[in-house]
Structure formats: C-alpha cells, structure tokens
Length: 136
Image (cartoon, rainbow, N blue to C red; front, top):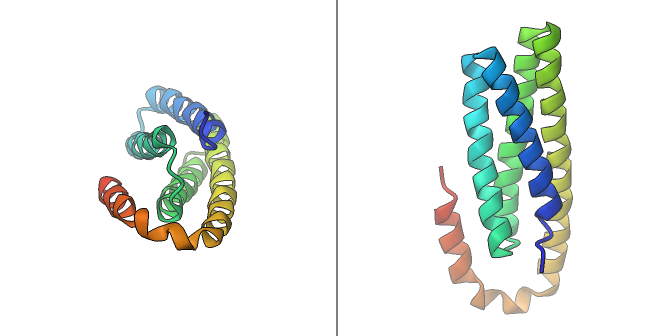
C-alpha cells in the first residue's frame, strides 16, 4: 500500500535534484549548504514515508525545515539576481509548494488523530523513538 507521502516525496526529490543541479553550476557556498540541508530533510521524509508513520510532531518538524529551506533559497535568489537567482527562485517556489502540501497533511493527520485519541497509549513508545531518530 503506497504511503500518503508518496506524491510529496516525489515532488521533494525533484526539487532537491533541481537544487543540486543549480548548486553544481554556481559553486556558491550558501547554495551548497542549503543543498545539504535539503538532502537531510529528504532523508527524514523518506524514512517517514517508508515506515507509513503519520506522526503530527514529525510532520511539523519536517514542515518547519522545508519552510526554512524555501525562505533561505528565496533570500539567496534575491541576493544573486540574474539568471542564477531566477533558477534558485524556481526551486524555492517548489519547496514553498511542498510546505503547503505538508501543512495540509499535518492538518489532516491531527484531525484523524483526534478521532483515535483512545488508542494513543500503544503508539507513545514509537513516537518517542521516532522523535529521537529525527533530531539534528
């Protein structure tokens, strides 16, 4: 059964690939650092997707990191300007859209979790393990 994250993960992979292409062309230290950040967030998202776990706290953490990545890329795009800036701005926009999708997933997940709050006790140990796994 495919994860509900699959479309977001695919879009995220595309955005990371575009960012890597721009980074390899520009050789700009800030863009290189943001590319590494994007790879880290992608790994977290892939792990969550593979385990079919919809943990609201983890979704919010990934959401925050993706939003920060989009903002930092937009700032760098403005700094660079020109064709390079436009390329980075396109990637920043893609990450911003991913942020919106993750917000929607987190909202849907919180709504679903509120319906099943009686079953929370069996899930709590897994949540604490997952939180430790995704700490930077």
